[in-house]
Amino acid sequence: MENAKAIIQSVFRTLLMKILFSTGGLIAVGIILIIIIVASILPNDDDFSLEGGGQVVSESVLQWKDDIAKEVERQGMDKDIVIILLAILQQESGGNLKGSNGDIFQASESKCGQIGCITDPKESIEQGVKQFKRVLKASHNNIKVAIQSYNFGIGFADYAQKQNDGKYSKEIAIAFSKMQMQKVANPSNYTCIRQEGKKYGACYGDILYVSSVMKYVGEIKSGKPQPTNYDGELGYPLKSITVTSEFGRRIDPITGEKGEDHHGIDLACTEGVTKVYASADGEVLPTNHSSSLGNYVVIKHDDHFYTGYAHMSQKIAQPGEIKQGDPVGICGSSGSATGPHLHFTVQNDDFSNPNRKNYNPRNYLDFGARVK
Image (cartoon, rainbow, N blue to C red; front, top):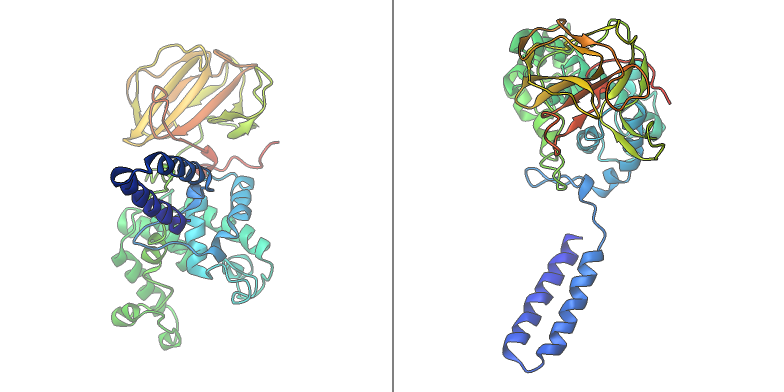
């Protein structure tokens, strides 16, 4: 596709010169207009095009894009995770069905404790997404720790939490690999897949797995932001959790129109009775009553991570510092609501920013089975 565009640009420049230095300018203008129209209708795959360090995922990986996206949605994860999973797939098997014996995500060990129990690529995708969701939660949504945990095992997430304040570094990966090798009777049984591992005596897993995956993950060309790397751990905003409406596309309960983008998750509660609690430490921002959100509270947890609590009958939290578990308000049905519930949101900015990125709360908390 890029070659086609480059050719068009070259032809465009040539024709421009003809306009400037020949008498056939009108004809050339007509040709240029045709070229512009053709260029504008060329298919655009930017939504899932990855670039970073000059590396691009292969066509054999991209063929599984739709299946991965469907599984990510089915498991209630943010769609931006698809980008990470495509990069992991590139590193694990390159999407090669025959070479991986069907287990394109190399997910057998996470399912049955041994290599080779998965031979169906669809099952491999399901298990691969499930395992990444598991390590992402254990990593407190730190993407790099989660990626390395996909290779090392979920124990790395706990190790990073205890030894490096939950953050990833090459040094912490080397230390974990060396520790794992020391646990076995004969460390020489491990074959170093990299010279760097051999140099450090760290041949358990791939100590450079994160950099190998991240070289395929740069800025998404469509401009969509990457999943947030909030280092804290969220708590539940209600004592009892029952989901009534999921994050994402749905039928608008007010207008009945299809395709409404629901920016949070709705939780059942009793109007005027059920207390709503802060999910994490942070700063309560000033808010006024909204015709859509009703009585709502926004908590800023860091520069790019906020939680919102909407449709309450009463606000308790006042602007200023708040601690996890402190009361935020009382359940209600204020604003555009068909009945009492808490509209709980996770986002990268305040509600006042129309260009904010909304995240699926299921990426941060286990809300149980999805509702239809």
